Length: 207
Image (cartoon, rainbow, N blue to C red; front, side, top):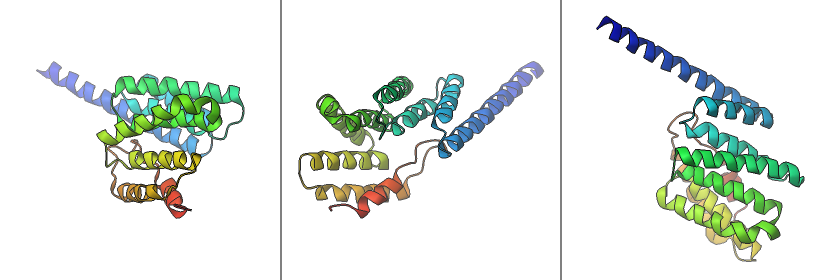
């Protein structure tokens, strides 16, 4: 009995230490990202993912860092390297957490970065996939602010591209802001981004 108690105490202590390292690692990765050190942040999230193979979050953030830094990138070789890495980690995240609306939004963002780089080349093949991702995510999580805003932003961009009125989507942007205000992430490291962009979009909505 004494031996069993010792083993339980050891397991609890080991788990606590691992969680402490995970927390410190994630905090440091976000700190690096906030300082604009995207390569270092991506590398640290990747190292955390190796230590946390059943946790989709570090995989998700490797994908997100490499996607966000690709918007506005003019060098195709660099962009391809970044987005291929993003795709690799989106796929790994999906394998851990299937039908996850946050990962669906991230996948849509990765595809959108390709379209933003070269709409003529990638728009035809990826636009339908992006729209489908947002529809599927909305069906799963209609109250998720990133899902609602992401879909609205994509719909507005599509309408603008085809010379259509974007005003009908303003109500969805407005709804997303209300959802951001009431959204509570499951843990401190779960996705909570998006409100600032939604507010900026709303300020210019319908113009």
